[in-house]
Length: 285
Image (cartoon, rainbow, N blue to C red):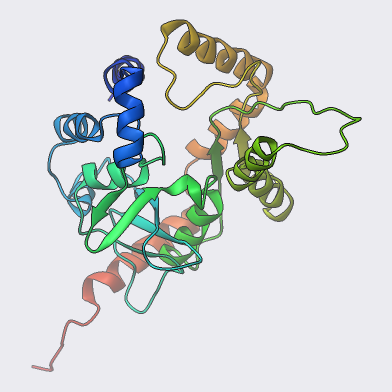
């Protein structure tokens, strides 16, 4: 889908999904712990994504390896991540994370976007799923782990991590205590922080392989924001950020689009042949 269509769809989805009468929404919060109508969201996902299984997207030669992360909340504590994949792990290889490719694409998105307070948790295969951000709000390290499982002998070449914008508040220097609201806000903020993962990866990954893009925002934009002027503000801030980081963006693009070396192509060809003939019985004539 072209980026222009993605933008149009994003703006339309916000206006269609995040609309609710305050009184009705408050009643839903009490009854189902969700302010918005989860059924509307599900119907939109089915309409836009169809009923294909995750694994069926792998038939498309232009489709990359894809995963979406949710948090399973009914399997005890600590909470556990679940990775919806459109690929299977190689024989004998196990990911650290539970997951599978047997569910539909719309189900994966519905499960991974079930933000508490916004949408109802999503039951699937005996699991209750909520937003993956509850546990892994920056899934870059998880993505690297999955790549290591899929291509254990391939050196890491390029990682691009895209943030959704960050807003930092300034506290009072002379505060002697914090309110209960502040304590809860601090807990939520810490649990959903994305920059700690970024700081760790920036230190650990080889030079010129990791690129993080996450603009500072002049104000806090809520998850359910759908006003066109606020979405245009997000867009304008993103464009300004990219202009200031143009060289970094071009550098990431160069690494992403560079051709494989002759040695890499030869290794890929050899692996393909091994995979093709692996487990095929041969007998002498």
